[in-house]
Length: 195
Ligand SMILES: [Zn+2]
Image (cartoon, rainbow, N blue to C red; front, side):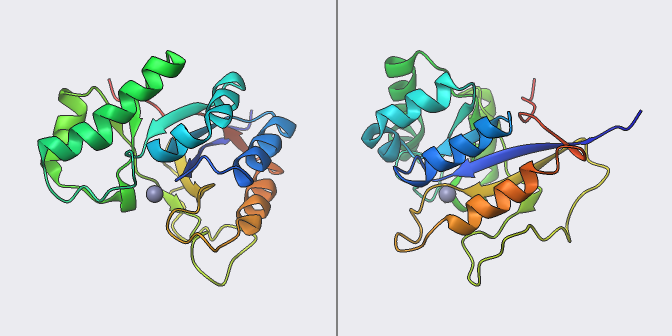
């Protein structure tokens, strides 16, 4: 029996009115699931996309309300950026977000601990960065830091364009499609929650 490498697809900074539906179409076509690290301000703006993401069996993670850099452990900021977004999703969709990814992947150690103990979140960064925000854009992933013996490889993509509003995401769609076509090699799964 061939044991396939497990891959967790994650999409940051959305939802986006044009690209997120295209990603959802691709996932549907290839019967795969993904975790969307949304920004609260986009979630509020595009409720139909949040509904669609959840209705199609994907997951949503907390990527702060406004893609705010969490450089300090400041209660007011955490309330506004993490808790308010958490409550917004729960109140509107009865969905409890369980994964947290800090913008830019950067945050102090004490916030990580607080996210896990006080807010009950699993912090998830990534194993492979698609660099889909870097020009020149690629159509395939660079696999130079592929951790072959890791149980589940988490890949970072972006459906949103918060960091570069004028960019396109057509190259991201291509990269995702090329990866989804390799279902004989990979199983597409959700990341694992920390107990
Ligand atoms: Zn981000």
